[in-house]
Image 1 (cartoon, rainbow, N blue to C red):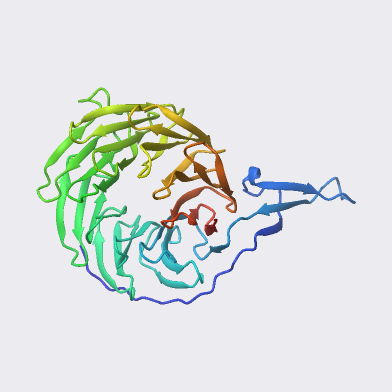
Image 2 (cartoon, one colour; image 1 turned 90 degrees about the vertical axis):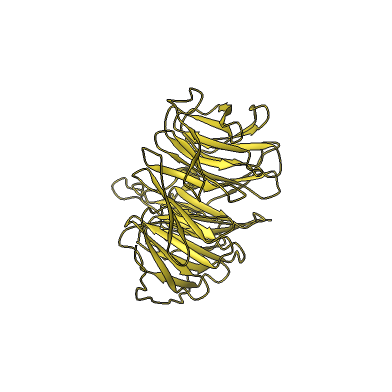
Length: 395
């Protein structure tokens, strides 16, 4: 583990702001989302039967950040000032920029391979980025001073109330560090496969992790003790394949896990067992979130279906459909509304009570890989395989 201060450069760059509609000339061979465009053919003289196609590309974004120029894998908003964003991309950089002015405040060339994740801590005083080079870089948000470099896994999960980082590794171990000291607080061994997801419980006293072989573990962060462990070999009701995502209910009593076995499992942490199975998807379930407003839970699958379930009965209430697999979903806080993004290049806002799609945002030309939203849900920032971050606002 090192504690370095690499040479930094501060940028103040004005970024291009999109108009609501952009008309482009696009050849049929270009990689675009065909469902998101309206084609119109010019009538006139053509040479050798060739015809130029004029395409009106729909762009509902109010502005965009285009400095990455390669796939953008992650985007997060500052928890206090939602005008500040951090994004991480295939250009090996994490970039901090402002939504209101689109000025890039910081671009640290910190990684020797793709930066795949970046996020702020609970109060926004620190920002961390993780790369495929196996390094996590932590900076002060106030002045972008590099306070510590952590050698280990690339995924970053902050403690909900403290300056502690939790990471899972491909070798099945989990690591926990203190920030800004960089002290390794504990190493947790119990998984036998890559740890794909994990989070602290709402009270911050324990955390849970899940791996690609379908094992779920609850840990005591102080002692490293395993408090609960579920896997297919010991519990026939649990996942038979890898766990892809998880979420914890607001009161910390239930954990929801989704997998490539097309199911979502509800696990009681008190009873230490599966108490419900949600079955209705026809492909891997990539996303899951509990509502903090209604007794609902939402799942999103690669079959394009977003299903809202009643937590008590484990029965579906609404089914909404994207034109492609769903990558991520979030509930708007204290609201029945859900935001989801998909490989169909669109952002959609849904009413979970009726299944109505209230808004469709278009503007990306490739898969949306991540998004972040303001607390009121009125500002949505996306990260895409097309190399762009777009900002969408609605009332």
